[in-house]
Length: 188
Image 1 (cartoon, rainbow, N blue to C red):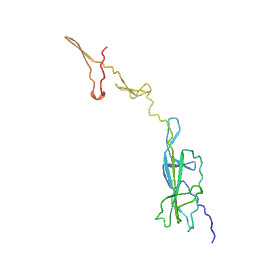
Image 2 (tube, helix red, strand yellow):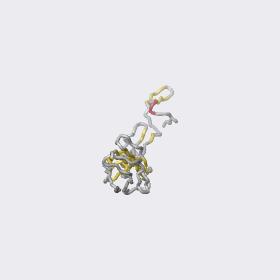
Image 3 (cartoon, rainbow, N blue to C red):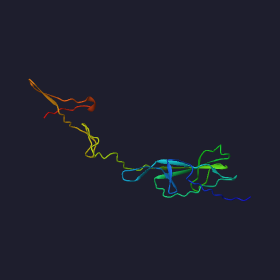
Image 4 (cartoon, helix red, strand yellow):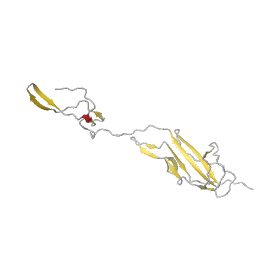
């Protein structure tokens, strides 16, 4: 009886992506946004699970997973898992491979699946919500045209004036839901 090693190429195009994508033929975390400085922002974690891989013949052992990793930064981590089945119905649990030699730790079967999990450390990103320069939030009580959004601290009111025997009566109506409190009144 002879032993031969059979290599099964696995396409990353098929399978199920969850927070990952294929870009330039490589598996990566999915790009979810672009920050204000034009840098890409990626999902913090994701996974890819292969379709069912038919081994095609009874094998005596699963040997290893051969991987090519390009451009992994110090803040990206990956894990590779395999599971197997003899009938494509009952599956073993996912088991992590041995990274030193790529050894597969799943039991031997006629079918296999591979799962790759990617995770990344959080990196700072700059997002501009609004520049507050066009005054679109300006109201009687809010100012937003000088680069900041702020409450107006001094609100000038135009009261109605009526003359009385003891002087003048100044009246101005302030809606209760517009202000939370009045700290003071100043007449000029």
